[in-house]
Length: 367
Image (tube, rainbow, N blue to C red; front, top):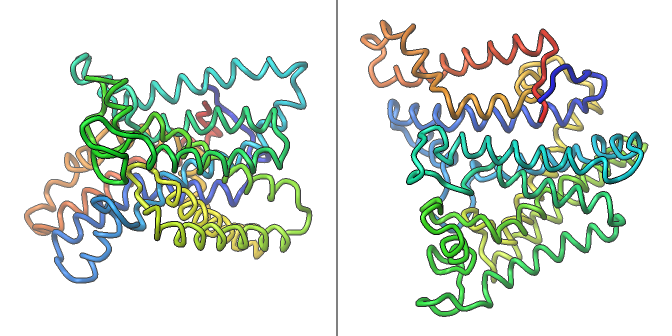
């Protein structure tokens, strides 16, 4: 890893959007869950539901977090890899960077959710985390960026959706019959359990063949990045982002009629719908931050977004609410059920202070 990436190389609206996504990951779900336990109102119940995943079919706001993470990674590729390609003597010079990033993301995924730190082979999971999904989507999207034309990349995006949709509906699952988009009855989950064996993550999430979906989601972000890089007029950029966003949402909803939106197996309709929402969110942040220049408020999110991987890993490995409890325990007697809300915010405050310190010292952990 390295530190000290210059701020001038950053795209502010993407950093802010990344920070927004990280905020949802590291504090929002726990906050709204604890708030509902304490308040138990219809409003807090609705918010708590929206910050949890549906059991299977459908879409909650919380479901946008992981695809938005992949989308933002893809959006940076035209800038970061474009520069790397221009400064490399030959394309093969890029491969060590790709392999290194892929390996580091997989290892971090093992640390976060693969039980690596338990040092117990019986508890180890090979593929079970967002960072590993990013690793897959990133490496294939970069290869596509290097070797395919822009039209070719769009064809690859469509091909990933079609191939994965066929894998979800055509093959036969031993003991179950033809693959269907239901828990434990789809071909991708069968393949995961067949190949990973005792190292499968043991959930209803699919990972290996779902790489087609991860790649398509990351490619959608790459398309957004190309819009921001290639078009000169900001209003034209905004218009293109909005058009693709609306188209993605609409196509995802239409396809949902025959091919349901399911986050746990990353169905192709889910890719279209979530990518469309990601385009719309990027358009919103681009309008506010880069067109209207309303930027002062965004400092809070930039601090998080510019060290997103650090924030993600630390929030999953260290119990910051537990640390906050060591300082704030005296308030428990007065707050009752609301005490968990306080420790959630206190834990986030500790993590944010660390990220702010890194930001002020121009320290950005880059994989």
